[in-house]
Amino acid sequence: MGKQLAVATLAGGCFWCLEAVFDELKGVESVESGYSGGAVPSPSYAQVCDGNTGHAEAVQIIFDPQVLSYHDLLTVFFAIHDPTTLNRQGADAGTQYRSAIFYHDEEQKKMAGQVLQEIADSQIWSNPIVTELTPFDQFYPAEDYHQEYFAHNSFQPYCRIVIAPKVSKFRMQFMERLR
Image 1 (spheres, rainbow, N blue to C red):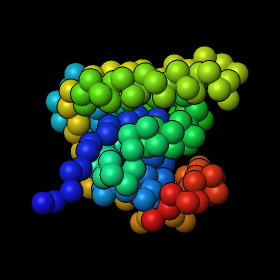
Image 2 (tube, rainbow, N blue to C red; image 1 turned 90 degrees about the horizontal axis):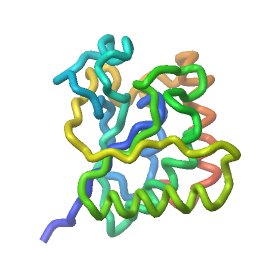
Image 3 (cartoon, rainbow, N blue to C red; image 1 turned 45 degrees about the vertical axis):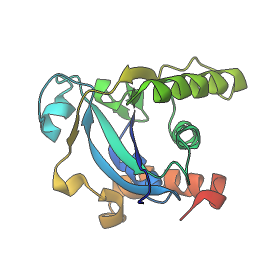
């Protein structure tokens, strides 16, 4: 009998950043960059960047819950982005860069609510958490050139200035969870 895999869909700013981190996490089978949470079917990157589709840049993560729990996946998620900035991550601004958890079932909704409360109670952040907790509806994969962007473009300025520091911070903080 094969292993039972689970799906998580998360948005936390630029999908390149999220993908780069989750690619290195033990228990993650695959990560795909794309769009979720909006009303326009099969949007393009240009449409999402315009901010009128309602979609967020998101990643869809296929993971093995026997190796990596959904709780632990969300713990990493909250460590690698700022969940207190509404519709913004760093210099990226607009609803397409919002912090969101698109839960796939009631168990994920309950666990996400628990993790959100743990993060709020820990007072790590001085401002309130604005991460939205939304039922998953649809995920549209981004164009091919967005997939594994950091792995293929690590010397590009955005990758060196924005993504590489996030990946380094993740590696130091979660060394025991690296593949």
